[in-house]
Image (tube, rainbow, N blue to C red):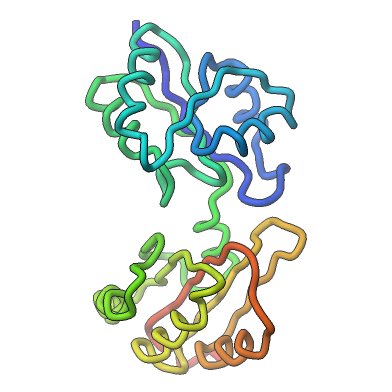
Length: 231
């Protein structure tokens, strides 16, 4: 009888982001596959969870899959976590989940913290449909190509960006979507200095240009269609 692979979201900033169900399952599992064992052990120790851990990150995930599946095939319960948020969303986990499905291993995905959904809902932009781009390409021309694909969609575009590239990316947004398209920058979500910067692209760009620097992880939401009722 095969075991169960639990996909468990972890806090994206505040340890209180964790759910009671996630804590219970982590305490009941036989092995925890995590992105960074050092970070995960601090999180687990905080909640007094003492279980064997194994690293499973972008550069070794394919190698680790066989070992983890062997445990699952023996009836073990394995939890998959990432450093923050839902595994598999711009984080390791997809390869393991895909392989487990092919091997007919039971998978249970727990609900929980997600930077993408939190930022989107808090942006005030339309949520009836959205496109998630993950981390953008590094080259400006590649970013423009990706943005142009979504220009005519009446859907909010959500992506991750780093503090040292946010100004350049905002300038590309102005070029592709226009100055008056609506945008929201969410940073340090659920942390002490959480902030949502909302407005037209030109307004938000002016706001961050006046800052000495921006810190923390950033989620950007932009609505490419101009809403004439928005002021």
